[in-house]
Length: 404
Image (cartoon, rainbow, N blue to C red; front, side, top):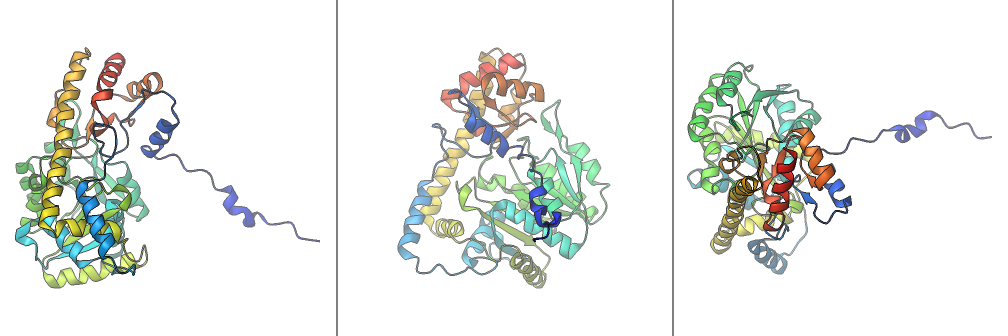
């Protein structure tokens, strides 16, 4: 006779289902919706006028070159291709510091991977410091840092009544944050509000961070989607020029359209080349026990484009087209809401930057848009402006006017 199996043998069968992701779960519901007029403004991907997320021509040309020249599929170094790292440092921090030895840089699987490596690095090397997030912030931020066993707190950032940055409240809070804690900042195109710090606020913030010995961790996922490549990097470079130790998570999902290739970078700015070398060794130790070394293809595309003047010029032109589409869509959205008779001033949408904006819609209105019009928006009212097209603009504006 066989003994009755113990419950321990079936422990995996007792695991409950995880709740759906607040953003990606909406996309699943959108796909299942049979309404031909449905609109998805939840997921954070750039879309052109046809509703597609295009493959850039510069990417196609770079891939063609790689296909013809690639001779091996061997592993990359733990930190990734050095050429990729050098080009990213040049792009993020500027030509003047392109050869700085104070920056330790590693190629990561997307910006999310960079943030998780940063979390593990902070927990392992700096200890159980609290990580301060803007209120609101990208919904995945808290989970990433909690997974790295870090405690998260929030600081004020967005003022709903003015639809702008609540800078004085933010500054006051950070001035009393415990010394040595980590502050997560959005480099540009704040997700989800679209409200960015002004240049003078970045300069003032650098003083506050230095006075409290706080460690900035800049999430820099949308360079080029706000104003342009240089203007969008002004905040990061202000903190760098202030001499602060800092971490920067970069993503090339949006500005290169390389979403599924998962291309990111974690750069750590230190006070000396010797410190950078030691930090790099610790970053590699973190990576080795996580994903071991990065995927090559996406990084090779970025390195190929940024290492070639002709391809770089083509990329900048294509990026400018994407940025202009977002800016123009904001204007059309505001005008469309006015024509639809919306009894509210939505002019703030034009002042905000990047793909996202808080629409000012409350949860009840968001739920009505979904139930009555098959329009999918995150519960907070965050709208992906890049999901609006000429074809769906009038339907969207009329629907919003109807639920206000």
